[in-house]
Image (cartoon, rainbow, N blue to C red; front, side, top):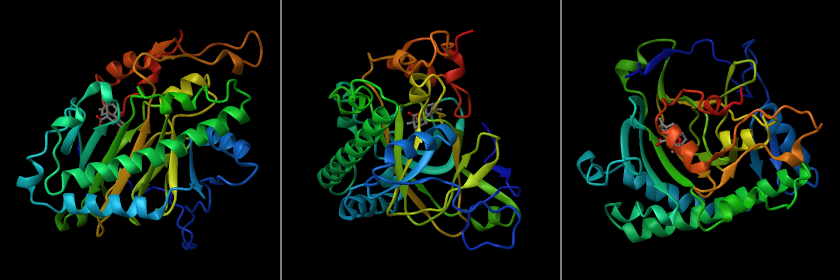
Length: 333
Ligand code: GA4
């Protein structure tokens, strides 16, 4: 397994009130107001430049968010014995430190669910306490995030002049959509490890998301970092009232590399717990993913990726380590 501790003292942050450091990026992360008539084009720019952006005026009610966040905190506050009664994440269920099944670890515990009814996995996952209430809140939250994700994908299709307009969004709205949902809890770094000055504990190691898009948020604790095109890492200031959208590998492939699947990771805060909730919008298992011909600018534009089904991509992804470049296995030579 890999080390949990790495030296990140060189990291650039975008803290707005920090004017003394020369490593400050202010307002570098695009913020998209979904009600802005220019949102389509701004989203496209953000997907090309960062593969990452923040959305405001997203229409998801704060009640939907806080109700689920509170239930999640209640769950993570249970004793280890109680939490270990939940089916182990294999891949769906409760996971503690282990991520995937190939030796990746992080300072994190989580609940991972699928939204694909065909997989039938969630039936065996019982949450201690009011399991029914918990499932109800998860369902409500996922449905709100799926709708918002679809709206963003329709804006992308419109901006890129992709026809029909629901070509991308229907992958998420399809009843067979193979999406998943993750609740993460990053406990604060213990004293002994805090003492290692200039070092940060890895909560979730760097990776890209395999799906089409991911929609996430966290409580008011920092930790999320994204990698820019030139490889520098920047910290994303938390904003519990907004959502952060990531381009996933499948969208990078469909856009023939125009959009970047953003590499990101989470480092652990030394004092505060971080709780995040992420919806990973994926296509149905049988969906064929390939560069969209309507996007090719010239007849001789090189096609960068081989066609794959989402099922093939997923099978391949689960054989990789978290930090691997999964899409490179599907590059045309
Ligand atoms: C990364 C994005 C999502 O969290 C996830 C992760 C999945 C898992 O935790 O089971 C994977 C990881 C993620 C990519 C490579 C494989 C699979 C762990 C891992 C090492 C749920 C997903 O879909 O892919």
